[in-house]
Image 1 (cartoon, one colour):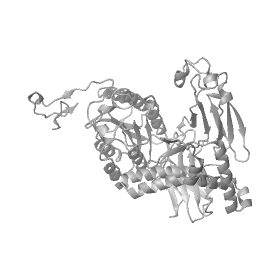
Image 2: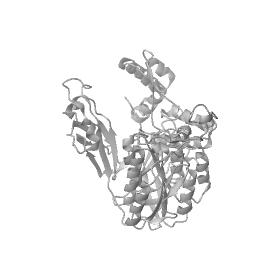
Image 3: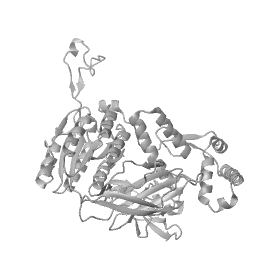
Image 4: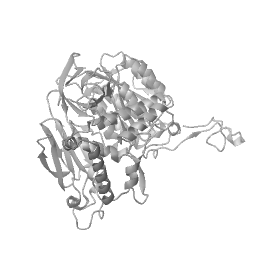
Length: 560
């Protein structure tokens, strides 16, 4: 059994579930069809009765679990592929998808005319006075009135962005400009070690101005310059912070810079910061935690893309999320000092971006009702109250731990704290949740060994606990079993043959400043440009003044 936790993307008012299940011809047993070998079962609990499910990849059967309120979806045959489907191009050479299968994809949504909030509680199996909370805030389908917005787009045009990455970024930026409303304002900065601005100030988003901006962007393709981020960010904030509209900084970059911590600390010190940050990192050279920290400080959101064919869709999705703000400056009525809250500050609520808040309480009574407050487009305070629903069929604690580890890692990077890094590693190992400071190791075992060890652990649990209590609380039993499995003695008993594998668990990185300085192309870029070398001119005399002309190291020669 493989168990993992993955945030679901929210697109066009629905959560997307995608499981890669395409098998090349010859992979599956001969004469066997895909649905006879592979099956998918999804338990979807949207915490509401009017959940709509749409599966476009497979025929499915739906059943309702009356006890939990979940909808159980079971896969059947793959649906025929459509030639116009971009995601299906890799399958078009296969005559029969009943043999190869296809990726399992569905969406589910809960449509409402009002903002909805749900709060789920999971009690700690070892301490009845402690537990985890997860608060889901879902936007309405549409708004009759929305905020006026001001966007400052910061686009990295350093040499490493050359080729397809930059073209895809420009395509998404042009699409974002088309979505601006006449009441919005905007500006664009293309930056490397220098900055060029479309205008000296924010301008109205009328059609003529947007068209001129698109033509202006085409005049500034990637160059062989370096990357400087603090100057464009400071310039953007100088215009946005004095603007009466809801301000956004949109940063699209593929690089890391040496002064990222100083940028974040300077923003943190500004307690009156109004601007929201939307950040996208392209490739593995950018510092994912720097971008995440910017988004956290600015109550926005961030993402990272590691496949060049996903660049446009990732950027487009981020900008769609910010298209319609619903509720800003959100606060949750949990004031006890013994309650941890992640993320904090809480991001704003958008039509395309539901808010998920995780909390953990210790040695205190869990509230029966949660109050959520924020400001609507009219500037008036909007209040939502929701009951706390105690249940053990949702991974509330894991959601909290995942958010906690991500933000603690970002804080450890920002503060350069070795003790905080150790805390993250200890929490990761204790909870079986991967982190940047731990590795996931897989050991080979057999079904016989697994059954024998589970029986031993079950007997041990029964000896140490009240049988009636465990029989009435399957969740407690399963949590105790998972904890007992996660120790060296159990692993040693199960491992056979000395076979193990260290598994990569994510695309998050702390960035590579040197690769950024060297302008190493990202994600297959760099094929569109030949480097021109600007030499000091003295190399023929053997002065050795040129980095790129032999063995000299004076630094007077640069790749432009």
